[in-house]
Image 1: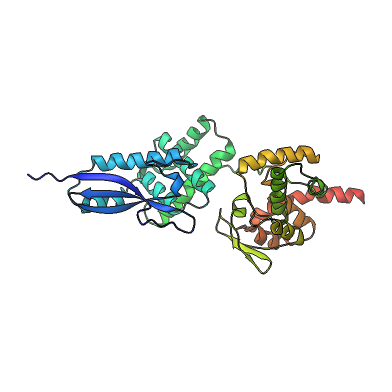
Image 2: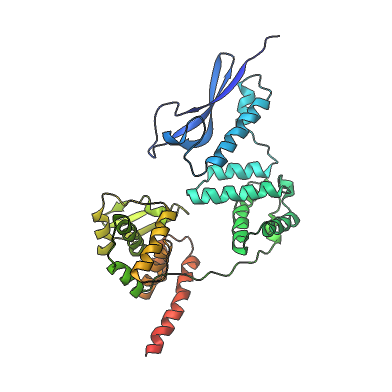
Length: 354
C-alpha cells in the first residue's frame, strides 16, 4: 500500500505584499505528496512580528498557543486528501458553543482592547469547563459560571462585563437557531452602580493649559491630552481619524458608531504643530500625565478623563445632549445621560452663589 506523505508548515506573507496597515496573512501550507494547498489562520501580522513564531505582539502568548493547537490537531488528523483538510478548516463541531464563540471573536474582532476582552472571557469559559456545548447553556450553568467568576476574585463590574460579552454571542446563536431559548431571559443580572465620572473642571483644565513643560515628551503628552479634551476623542480613536473641511468625521474603533467633530481653533493649533499626532502607549501616557498633574498643581488624572472633561464642559456650556452624544459617537443617548447627572452638582454649586 502506497504511503501518502503529509506535511504542514506556517507561511507568512506568501504573496510578498502588505495591506494598508502594513500587515500580511499567516497561512498554513499543507503538502500531500507533491501537491500543496494554503489555508488561512485568520492572523495578520507585521513582518517584525513573525520569526517562525509570533513575537513582538501584545497577544503573542495567546496566538502562539492557537498555532500550536492547530499544528497538533493537524498532526492527529487522518488525512487522505485535501477534502479532509478542507473539512477541518471549515467545519467546526456544530454543537460546540466554545468553538462558535471563538469563531465569533475572530469574525468580529473590533478594537484590539475589545478583542482582548473577548478572548479573556473565552479563557474564563474554558477554565470553568461546565459550559462547552449549546446544550450546556442553561440558567443553572450560567449561575454556576457567575459563582465561579466571583470565586476567582473578579469584581462585580468585571463579572457583569464578562456576562455582557457571553450574552452577545448567545443572542446571535439564538437568532441563528442554534438554541431554542436564551438562558439569560430567565436570569436577572444585577447592574453595577455607575462609577463616579472623573473629569477636570474648567479651572483645572486652564492650569494644565497654562503649565509649561520642561521636556519634549511632556509637551507631546500634554498636547495630545488637551487635543482629546477639545474633541472628546478616545485614545483608540486618536490613532487614526479623517479630517474633512475642518471637521473630524469617522467611526469609533470600539463600537463602529459614526461621529462628527468640529475642529475648534485650540484643537487646530495642536494639529498644526505636528505632521501627525504622535501617540505613546496608553500606559506610558498615563505615567506622564501623573507627572503633569503634579507639576501643574491639579488632581491626578488619566487620559480617559479627557473624554469626560469634554462631555461635561460641552453640557455645561449649553451644547444639547443629543449633539454631545453624536460628537462622542455613543450608540444610545442613555450613555451620554451619565454626564448630565454630573451637572446636578455643578448646578447646585452655581445656585448657592446666587
